[in-house]
Amino acid sequence: MSLYLGFDSSTQGVKAILIDPARGAIVCAKAVNFEKDLPAFNCPGGVLADPDPLVKHADPLMWLAALDLLLLRLQQDGAPLGRVAAIGGDGQQHGSVYLNDGFARIVAALNPALDLASQLAPALSRKTSPIWMDSSTGAECAELTAAVGARLQSCTGSPAIERFSGPQIRKFARSEPAAYRDTARIHLVSSFLCSVLIGGDAPIDSGDGAGMNLLNLATMRWDEEIAEATAPGLLAKLPAIDATPAVAGGLAFYFAKYGLTAGIPVTTWTGDNPASLVGSGVSSLDTAVVSLGTSDTFFASISPYRVDPAGFGHVFGLPSGGFMCLTCFKNGSLARERVRAEAGVDWDYFDVTAFEQTPPGNHGQWALPWFEPEITPLVTRAGLRANFDFAAAAPQVRIRAVVEAQVMVLRRHSEWIGNFKTLRVTGGGSNSSGILQTLADVFNATVETISTADSAALGAAMIAAHVAGGVSYAALAAAFCPPTRTIRPRAAAVQIHADQMSEFGEFEATAQTN
Ligand code: XUL
Image 1 (tube, rainbow, N blue to C red):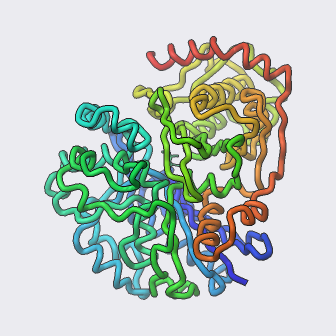
Image 2: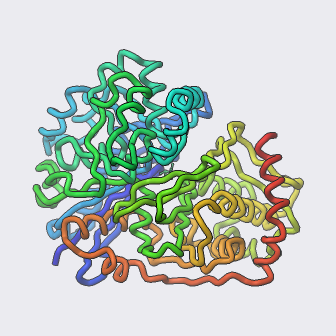
């Protein structure tokens, strides 16, 4: 029976899931962690060190080394790669890769005796890639807003956003004009890795393309005026657009060394959030997804198309058709990890005990863990903000203060998307009972989890099975995404959080300004 392989190239590592739709089974799952497995690239947490806290770049060669290592691990584990009928994938959104005019020739002639990173190194016109955590393009965003006006948000689904690829490209074009001139192609993380798999120039899909401030979502084409306002001659440097994922090309011969069959279809890669919406199996407008990963994201499919009046949220194309909206919070799992480590407790304590020992509402004590400059709401000065003596408080109080504040912010900034009866929760944080119950109580919604926390990689495999194998999304969702846990809101706790909402809003507003 045909198997489908999905890759998720995320901030901290690369994951793969192999699915068998006929049996409704995940055949195997494997991961490579950049920090642990590829320390030579000096990217702890997937990010290169930089003296400017607003600058966050990664080494694109590390993503290639991780792909090689992941395939090797799958092969060494005896994964039946010879039965893979098609491959899909997704990447962390907004990150951009800059390639010179040698890229097309090099990627078309990959030598299996060598590795990917060393062969593609000469194709880079810029050694590093700005990623979604970068917020150093405030000036470029202001210039683009002045040049394009309100059309930027109504056409591209988002106002000018610091981490989006358009403002990032503008900054590069201005600060390194010669390197920009030498750049023949600008790919996203997703389309770059897809290009490598097919040994050619892959398109960008509308899920990831919408995270660039360049794609006109009404025409599903690059907006020429916005592209020219972003950087001179940019249009010619952008790949083609696939409105919905299609077959981007056949698998390059290079990958046969891992036991895969050269020529099998590779579908257009998408962004990690669009893939995660597919991989969460959500088909109803009543259900939103909360993904608790390096970034925390809240997203749902929408109809009709609408944009966030407050300007924090985004609209992306949805690989399974139509549009989705998303709000992203930068301080997700790394912030929770830091709070846990500083409290000197283990994950069991963080996920369960801390919540047993403290009451819902935490007596109005909140802490916003903005250890990195935050995206939602916009905060450029990093640092934890609390309305009580955080350092002196007991570990359980600190933990509840952070989790409740994160969930309250999630609620406030997702209201423009709608009110949801059900939340599907995915990502590493979905293993925490305390977080799940807090979500149910703050949103007054039923919370569900699915069997895999890696919904992005699963979604990528499902896209491959649908596009190349003709399996319906409904059948795939029924096979791979039935809810495994259901957590209901508790009336008394719901009331406590509802009563606190306006006071919390004041706390958040003050925290933003100090
Ligand atoms: C979404 C966003 C992040 C990245 C990394 O807009 O910036 O969620 O996709 O996961």
